[in-house]
Image (cartoon, rainbow, N blue to C red; front, side, top):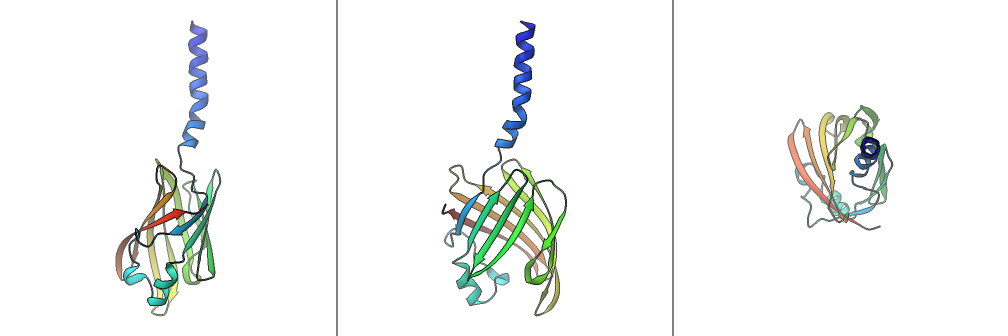
Length: 166
């Protein structure tokens, strides 16, 4: 009886890391922006041309055990971002030729990324801080990204919804 109890405990403890790893959603795939369910770009969204191009935003995600590789394509131009899940700061290219430093971590079923970037704008250099929370619907067909951005022009929170294509 004691041996059976010990084997049961060992089996449960051995399965715990696998169960923990499996509880994170799988974001891999191709996603298209759902403009009807997403917030409008607003004051930080560029002019009418940028808003029209936004309707064709496609995001391709490749997820591994330790990162997401996110490629955003709009208007024939692409940008790739890597988010590592290790909770450590990582630096990479940001918007408008700037540099971005971010930290990503799992918070239950959500991937939370926080960081900052510096970029050059027509109005001069600008420092931006951000927090992004990425979640997946229960059926895996809808990805929601809630982004809060703080710039010298103020703070803005926007919800962006994507429908899975493949």
